[in-house]
Length: 110
Image (tube, rainbow, N blue to C red):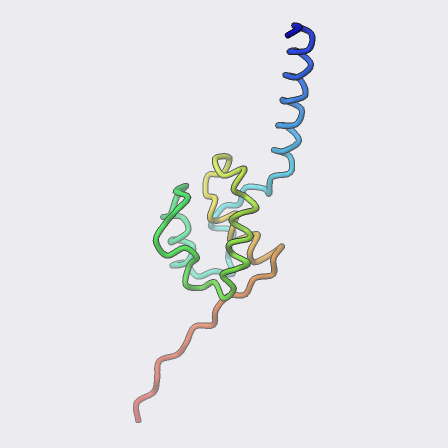
């Protein structure tokens, strides 16, 4: 292979990688997700950066299919985020217009 060709291919690779990174959703701090309860935000924070966790999607997610789409959307950028589940929650609630389950009140005893 010609050295000039290798140089051109390397430059294209890095240009494409930079473009891909600029398409990534912005990082979101879990504490900025004020529409979630403190317990729900703690759960997202506790999950850290593990791609597979028990309880995913969280109990408050009313539309699991939208949560999975949001998770799939950030998968190529997963390692870029401090708290990828915060980004997923932000996408789910914002871009995908996902709903939060309403808390059920306990049955009243008569």
